[in-house]
Length: 215
View 1 (spheres, one colour):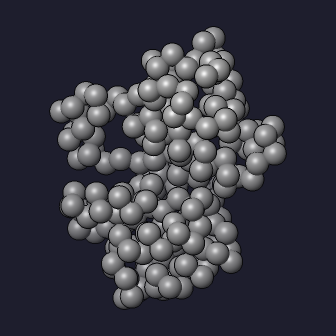
View 2 (cartoon, helix red, strand yellow; view 1 turned 180 degrees about the horizontal axis):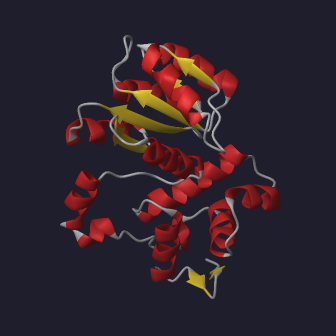
């Protein structure tokens, strides 16, 4: 995991805190968007945790630069200000999550673990907005023609209960490639988690007895 903030003191303290949690290792702390892009390429983190205040870039632009440099990386934006406009901007730029800087350490760790597993995060504000439109809140994969062969393979193994690591081993894929496929399935479903994506696939008739139906 990579931490990105122009004022490094706080995030260096956060790095020390997060390193105490099992399964999380902070590979570096970047002080600018340019520094983050360089580190994300050379250090290869699964997740980037980024502040909205950077001295060389706005948050949406920084997210876009990071995703361009490493399409498989999950970017989590932390903001002290909140605001749905910024949240939607960074989401459109490719951020996988957006949280308040005031979240607890356990909440932050839980969010990082979800993102590392290919899932997406939403805030209560976004969930409330989407709940006014049930179709938007419970999106559905329309049919097999929307899924690539590899996405169908990953979906079948997800339905069988395999972890990302097990899926990668079975299909000869790198962890980052598995995360990208999982994220693509979730995004095509219009939902936010593996469980919801599987439910969406079942509603669309793509799953029968845990198996993906052929096109």
